[in-house]
Length: 403
Image (cartoon, rainbow, N blue to C red; front, side):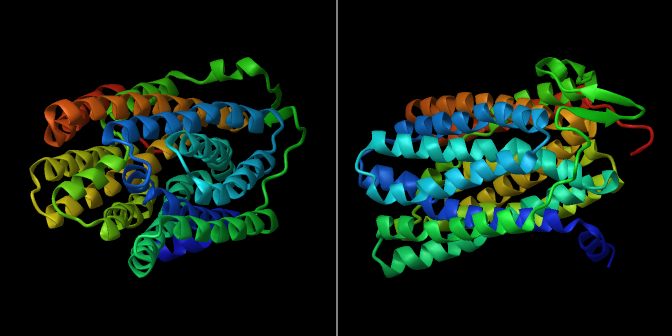
């Protein structure tokens, strides 16, 4: 009952953002759940090449987030910047149908990830602007759960479509355009952002604050400690393509490879909102610890699993850690950043995450090819365990939770 009341009390624009996230992820997963196998089977790319490409295009997405976040701070117009990202994401989707080479895929994926990067920081900042301070964890968790539910639905659709069309990748890519268009229309019509007194001046307490390019220097030590912790932990988080390759190693057929992402996304759906809501009532640090422990358990399953069942359990736990850690990390970042530079704060957060994913993906590809898949997941487990020690050092328990 308390959970239902918490959900119903959240602002309607957060719900609309969640629904647009659902539709956009539906579109994205219809393409990217099959992109690794499409590149391998039809374009002849190797696992290492695909892993490096994953890291490169994701880095583009994360690098642009600081610019998009700062722009939304400067003009105090999250919706405008966010709408540009949604529009570009919709525009590029049909081009995947015509992919004829690895280089063509890199260009189109880079544009798609650029669109994704433009969306992220303004969207998270907008949720922070809209959410009551004592419901930030629930708001971010709800968005994450709804967004990931789109991935779950897409994974089921992909299995059915690929089976029915005898693995017709291009037909699947064509269908992905439809939910993207609906999401764009829903966003334009349904989302409203809070009004601000002036586009370049905002009121903080009793004073007016002019936003400048160096305003990020006003972020305090609590924020930077979170960034340091993030930079360590995310080195354990390489691209999800390696989960697919691990599943293929133990006998999952191409037509059912999306079941990997299905379990991965189910882990996020079931964990994101409950742990996010709990972090509003209890110590966020303790809930973040649970998320990191999920990562350790996921790697153990991926290392020692020799059957599809164990690997799918591992992918579920991998999704659970992502849902838990990201929902709580963004809640903590929102807590530690003033509203007038919240977009920039998220931009820095995502830039660091992108650098880590790029490094982790390259290292995982090297270890995978030279020492085997087991050692790639072992390295991730070691980084995760080290992150637990860093968590206790960098994020002290609060004596009292206040908002």
